[in-house]
Length: 422
Image 1 (spheres, rainbow, N blue to C red):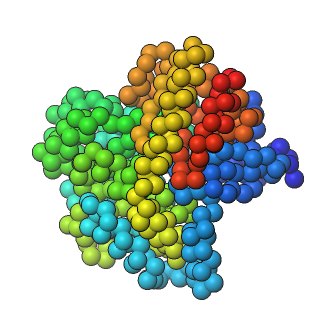
Image 2 (spheres, rainbow, N blue to C red):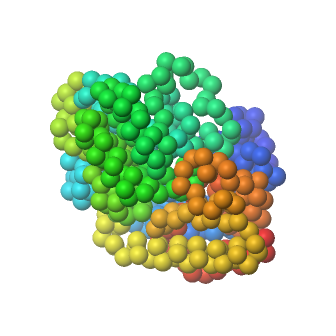
């Protein structure tokens, strides 16, 4: 079947024809390509068209599609194990590797998604502090847990949904909203609720209102405030963990969170997640402590095998990060030059191998308000032009582009040549 036939028939059986909203290309004049296979930094649709892939499965395909070591690990495992709902040596191997190579993770618990990881980390924080309120930042997306769906960025922002129907007011009454990169807004909340805030959760490099890195002083002050008030600081590194650096964004900033969440890369592209951090906090989880969290499929052997193959390969090849930074820098600089030639108001936010192209007359984009003020219609036109030319990138300006190990200078040159024709 062709792309269009598959997508149209899918609408009969799946809402919008998709299993995650951003895939539906809402508001665009093109249908989403239906992807059949991926090799390295390229994907191929059902019509046989080839694309350079800058989505990378929304981040996890850092080693490229079907990396030979990851595929071997999956094949070797699946011959003997799919799922047991019981302890395995594979989950120990991955847990031990992460705890001994990531500075701020003493203990870790595996789950099945980023959403599970973030909601569970908040539960630990509430259980340990005996407090109910949390602070999140406008534009940061931490999954579709009810308590996070307030000014949540990502697909909520793209679809213009005010929070989300189906979320009771009671589910969000303990969620406080601060402004990203504005420590004053955080201080105001602590002044109002000095002994009520269990946790502050933040993407240290936001990737769901477009890529917006936190400012160094902002994160330093945030750490200080949390320590002062006995509040748990949670870094949501679902997107940035193992990507912007092996040890995540926290290693770039030199900030120590109390808990961290991971997903995407740590499962080698298979459904996965984890949360971990200080031993005294993690020991509050059942069966050691009173905070209950469980998951039948957590620690699935196939996922653990794929994850272990991925993170150990990244750990053993630190030069990968320098390479990805170099390739991403080439794309950024040359795209900025093209935009200048064309008189287009392009602002590119980048941190290592993550970036977003904002079409913004106002210049720098450092928070949710500025991201929302960008010209999304112009971005949509740009996206359609690039897609038709064989560049697979986010249909939403409020998402990230990802550069991986298998991207080449030739891939970047093709991107720039096509952009110049826009």
